[in-house]
Image (cartoon, rainbow, N blue to C red; front, top):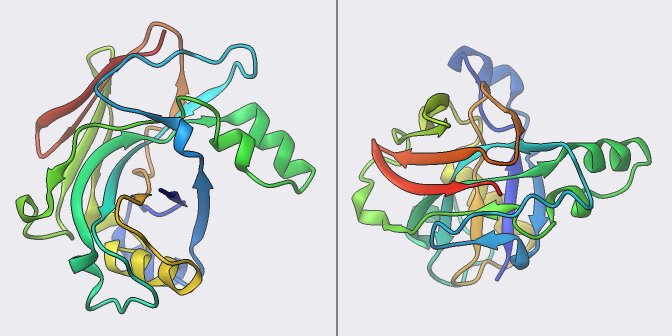
Length: 205
């Protein structure tokens, strides 16, 4: 199983998309050991970092093998959708960027990918209009809609599948809303929803 992330994929103003969209998507990989499921609490890895950034994202699960997938066919490769948090150790990532090293350690530490249970794709008749949000300690922090994605689900799948074969069970974190990103702290309570349905509910401990 691969966990694939896409960075910098949302705008606050849809009129910006045309000028930003150049066909080059920011893709990275996360280790499967980053996953936390079942709404289990996530242990803050204070032995390696003290700056963890949260990003709420929709997560697409691949349902069948695909290579060089067309944008037209891409939706048929999604079996389910969940909501998740893409955690980044900001201090580690900053240091690695300065040294021109890869992102693996800043994105791939244990617990860096909490995700909800999945909902079947047929629950989402319009992939271009899905609402999702994140509350921390009861306060609305991030609100997103897939209409504000620079690269939509189909474009992401088609692009990634040019470089690597997608297999059943592979997960794609599709990007976070442009506003509301910040640092998480021990004891924070995170709750993420899709279309108002609470699906992800855990604490950072």
